[in-house]
Image (cartoon, rainbow, N blue to C red; front, side, top):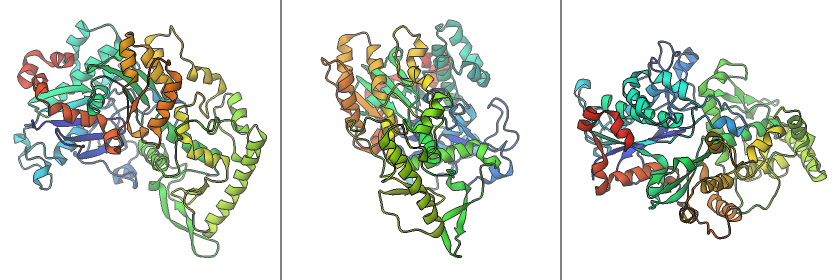
Length: 569
């Protein structure tokens, strides 16, 4: 045991723990609370609160109520472009590029305080988790392994990140002067350089190593070669790993992920399922009073649609948590093969009219659909919604499990009788369909078409379904023997890959997509913790290997050669 400390900061959550352990001991959201003193600027001037676990989205932080502008939450990665959009392309901006380095530093500081990294006693010895030494005497005695999420942005965030990297300009100057001409490669090296500088200068680490996430995900499955399919909150990324080396030229990314599914679900609730407004937990008050004077199932709304909190990052995170809560319900299921050829929330008459006009919106549930069967389903949905709204107002009958879902404000959504309710149960199907809902028809060709001869940026970033994305990645691998081996080692990871029958469905789709000469085999852990935290577990395994110890970048090497040496490893 080397006592290494492993940190994996992802788009949605950040995981920290000691190497050699089975799972991370600290899992917190990937955002921090900004303090007073002005929240504007480029990010380097913002003052964060003392390192601590971020607050829950169930209630509004007092600082945010006092001043929504300066005390909003600060995400580590930039997800401002998505904003609950139903267009998968809008989620491609979250490409693993750190948008706020103060928030990145605060996440590591919080983990150091919680797991007692400063005093060297580790969390297993007990105690309150506080520092036992004075601020000036703190010293980290553990080597630090930082997991890099990977980069597929191709210059999208280069200008913005350069403004926020002014403190690292000295170390990055040498890399940019002698580095490659590809802007994405320069950005990747510059970010790794900034990570090394932060861990050595701010946290006084004795040794540091920065490892790519896909490589560690493959190691967690006990494989050095494999096609890593990571379905996370910010989208899906497919990366070939051969003998422990990441083939970045064959990496492919799509915006279809957990947050995109949540955005589609939220819009379907308001347009097709009868919900007037989807209200997160923090905006709700006590139960409302029914017409008979008793308590109703419905709850009052403290912060309505026009309130300033609805425009904050905190509200966006609270809505994402609410949609995740509904997506992980027992009613959501994915068939191991495609039984229903229809696409969820596509084909309704109102939706078709708006998409033809280019509005990208959906229609009301009572508009029905283009076919006779869907017309009857739409009318039934309208009647059921009206009946449920009346029942919710008067208390209603007890809910039968599996037939309806109750939102936090008391609105009950029918799942058994109406077509929109059935489509809510089939929502993961959208990860494998060529067509997506709430997107104008003139943009559908760009979503489903993978064209030969595109530029590297165009072919890497797309909105393809998972199996076509994996096929595009395999096609980009030049060696035929390597492609055959990758097909036999398709490694499924990520928090959004935990839907039931996800691995069976991917195996079915890949078998129909790949050439018949290739035998596709999908490997996915049955343990939800292992699949969700695969990169961290791979880092924990890597730091425990004796052959890895010579790869650490020591403080002496950093002081002599700078961050350039660590960026090349």
